[in-house]
Image 1 (spheres, helix red, strand yellow):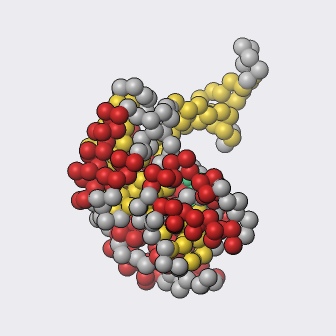
Image 2 (cartoon, rainbow, N blue to C red):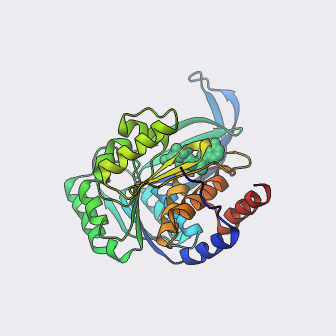
Image 3 (cartoon, rainbow, N blue to C red):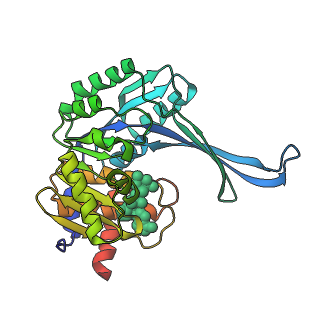
Length: 331
Ligand SMILES: Nc1ncnc2c1ncn2[C@@H]1O[C@H](COP(=O)(O)OP(=O)(O)OP(=O)(O)O)[C@@H](O)[C@H]1O
Ligand SMILES: [Mg+2]
């Protein structure tokens, strides 16, 4: 185990400069998060459930869309590849992506499934219920072929590909092989799909996903390393990054390097989407030529910056730098 050289603010600034305008393709399950905000005034006469009087209604990008959003927040040029349904929500995704300047010529409209939507009803800052509109079945082989062809034609123009797998049926071995035409492929995997990712540059599961994929229960540093090495060997990839929630992150490389960074958030408000931020920043840092030490630390600072915010969020270079500065002053 080695202590990583601390990420100094000038190094981070230099990396942010190099990250700008990198061309990143995000392949994954794009979603719309729908938010219905209100107040509970009474119990329904129809059933013993609260009646929420709606004050506000909004839509945000989720899943692979949130990864794209995090890449844009750091100035990358981003193209999203995936599917949407033949429904009004697909227009919503389109306008959300247009608003942040993500290219969407790789988003295909498919007939036999809806645009993935997660509707949350929130009353008095508490989630009352969530409704998921989605299909998790594999997309049809004809649609899969269209996605694969698009990736095959465009991945080689990207500086890196991120595969953001939320298990909604988009990712297949064919798509992964097409993505391997890019110089760098980083994956946020679902454990049941792990075998599809053989040959990518880096996989970045959370602990739970790593445990399921390897069958190794992680309880200490030794079992953590065993799980990571098992993934490195099985997938023949260069790096495995394990995101460990409040315990930070660890990186293991095929050539024996092992790095650990502790979590850095000052106050934790909302951890949702932190994994999206982590994989986005990790990829962009590698694409900008960062060493594994610096890429891991930058991703960890960025994830720390978003857990300090409510909702799935993005971190700007200034927000990440503020956290790095803070670490330098107190560490
Ligand atoms: N409670 C926390 N305190 C501090 N940092 C955190 C916390 N939770 C997450 N993080 C930061 O976010 C990173 C990613 O979080 P985590 O390992 O939970 O990923 P994840 O489960 O894939 O997240 P999600 O799927 O909700 O986006 C961590 O490695 C860490 O840097
Ligand atoms: Mg995750």
